[in-house]
Amino acid sequence: AFGAGCKSFSVDAENTYYKQGEDNTLLKVVDCGLELVRAPVGTYTTKYTVPDGIDALGPKCFWFCNDLEEVTLNNDLKRIGEDAFYGDRKLKKINYRGNQLDYIAATALFGFNSAPWFDTQADGGVYFGNVLYRWKGEGGEGATLTVKGGTKVLSPYSMSAYYKPDTYQGIKNMGAVQLPNTLEKIYEYAFYNLTKLTSVNIPSGVTLIGEHAFQNTSLEKVEIPETVKEI
Image 1 (cartoon, rainbow, N blue to C red):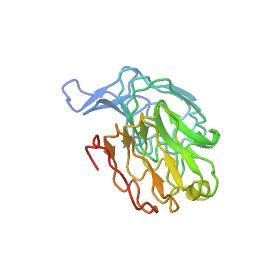
Image 2: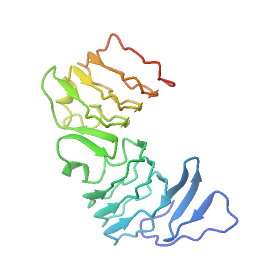
Image 3: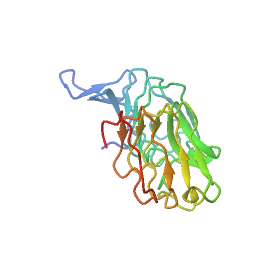
């Protein structure tokens, strides 16, 4: 709704749906708390710190912030929405030391017209706290990929070969995935299009298996633990 040059928002005190943030950000009242609708960083801001008290980054909240190079996320952030950093072509550094994140949309930092931040990450699991945002790099034919201990969440498309298939050609060849006992949530399309995947363990403690999480794989048998509440 608002261009990247907008630097200030003012919300009527009687509005129960939207609020004005301490740094003139536009906030929305959502189930998990307060969502950043738009950060008034303008087109010339190179660094931005998400204020404490923000629980979610809404879709496109940093839309085409053309000069944004570095973002520091608050430690109590819980969600990052679709295309949150869309068009931020200079964004190469994101600071985050929290462990409250529970969901990162697939296109938040990856895909068409995405920020270059992802390309600067080392091969392997790309993480925000305990959330595996996406796996980067290749693996051997028929090999087993092991997700590190401590991982609690697999983001949508986190292991998938769907986006930029040339980048993930190696992971398509994976025959098995070993998941840690700390895992709690497997979001939608997490393993989508891993056509040679024949084996995966779902640990006790997992409560959610998202829509199409294992679609277009070669799995023939999956054991669902008693802790799973939603598929």
